[in-house]
Amino acid sequence: MEWWEWIFVILAALLFLTVMFYGVQARRRRGGIVAQRAGRRR
Amino acid sequence: MSVLLRAAELVKRPVVTLAGEDVAQIKDVVYASASGELAGFTLNGRGMFAGPMRKTLPWAAVHGLGPDAVMIKDESVLAARKALDGEREGAGGSVLGSRVLTDGGRDLGRVTDLILAVGEGGTDAVGYEIEPSDELAPRRQFVPLPDTLAVSGEALLVPDAATEFIRDDLAGFGAAVDEFRERLRAGAPPGSTVTGAPIDAPADVRPDVAPGPEATQPAAAERPGEPR
Image (tube, rainbow over all chains, first blue to last red; front, side, top):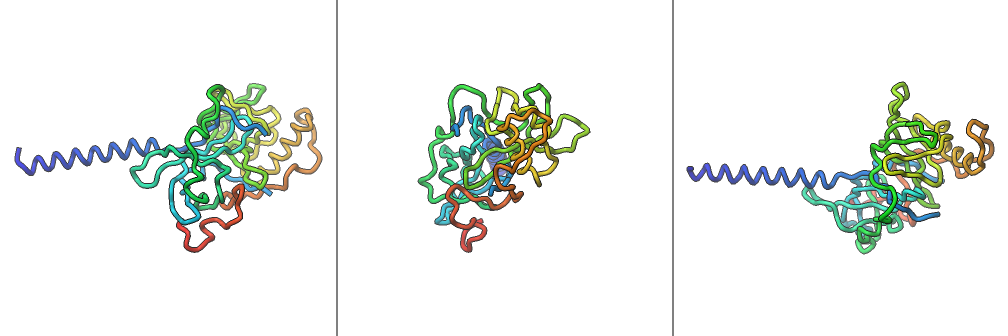
């Protein structure tokens, strides 16, 4: 492969990894409303 | 005097110290499954690529709950994650999407949000916003909760009498919760007329400014120089 093809492949791989990492983190960051298993009693 | 707000509105709200440092973002709203008290928040880090933090924010450490930020004194008030874990046994977990059943076995719908009453006496879960299973019912309804909650493995249980106090909008829901709890305390049979004054003053329906347990300072948005 030509050198510029290698650069293209590397940049594409980096972009793919960045998007994957962002997607995983976005999923981990997703919040909600959680009931504790047991609470402080009044 | 208490203020009603939807718990989902707190998610993604930034956590800011009184020094103006933006330290985290609200991830989960955690409440006690038995008493309904708000226990605190789990946190996300700041930034596009940040994940969940190991620290949590107990409700007692919240200095003020504003419409645009949750204020804390400083980063030292953040606690370890296990502070919000609860016990190993018993029901718990995410309530969004859970079924709401009456103790008579009637399926009311699925939970889309939790309604919190924030006041000087504490912060409690007072109702569920549900998507009714009855297709003829409005798209969103509000179901009042008793003082003591019941959360089973898959369903959230409410007394049969709660069906009489279901409201279609948040306006007036605070009064419905008061009446519902008054009836449960009085032990009146379902269907009987409720008399007597509400337990608390009627709640304002303002899903924005709400005082924290030691809220003596205005919310971040009201103070010049604070990040939003």
